[in-house]
Length: 315
Image 1 (tube, rainbow, N blue to C red):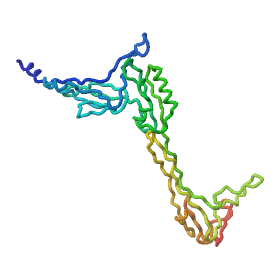
Image 2 (cartoon, rainbow, N blue to C red; image 1 turned 45 degrees about the vertical axis):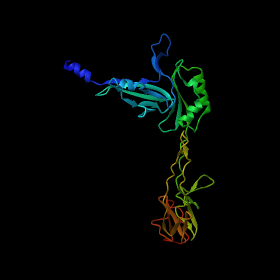
Image 3 (cartoon, rainbow, N blue to C red; image 1 turned 120 degrees about the vertical axis):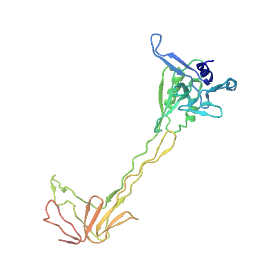
Image 4 (cartoon, helix red, strand yellow; image 1 turned 90 degrees about the horizontal axis):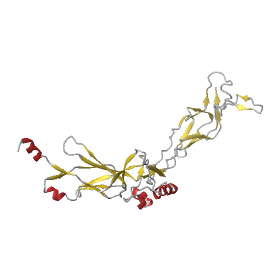
């Protein structure tokens, strides 16, 4: 025996697995069409897709098993040395070249119930039916939907449409959306609700359509202990649900920090702003309320400032 023959003799032999599903190439466009496509039979979750049923006898002859790789919707069962379906759907297989050793067999399944990445939509995946092989015509769609865990937002009309296509032996590929989740609602931001009219206003609209620019409410007179404003807390939006019925928490609205200056006090327990002395109230940067017992007006009081009101001293 020469060295080449000796090398071939020592080279390991690999046994190919047995596939437990059928795939056929069919013409979908009619006699004059070149549109040929590979179609798989339908399999249920838990089906053994590939294994080595007679391996012990082949092992005695020096054979090793071809390595298996589980793709999407498939798991490798070490106890069976087999690939098993984890979802119901349409299987396919391919041998993949390796840098060393034998080709690796990978099997994956296109699920009959497909869920979007964000879990907010679910589809029934219908493939052309192969005669005399397991198909959706022998299945209950409601059971398949329940098996996939889809429980929320199911459109029964869409399921009925899918069932009708299956019963009519629809000869094409189609995805039918049959369930839709609900996105969470937007939260409401916190805000200040003033208990009195404040500015800056353009002025007071008169009956003849002109504006009295003296009434601008830039500084408003307030009395001691007067309730000036109420903080409206931020509120969460309505919670949402995905097609699995899982709750999607909504985000709460943005909070605000109420600030006060001078003779103003914020009472957190009551979410109220009150005056601690008579004076003139003004609003700074929307969320800062100032009450000044003694107000100093720099410059002239004009139509720009409007009337200045105060319950105390003004300079």
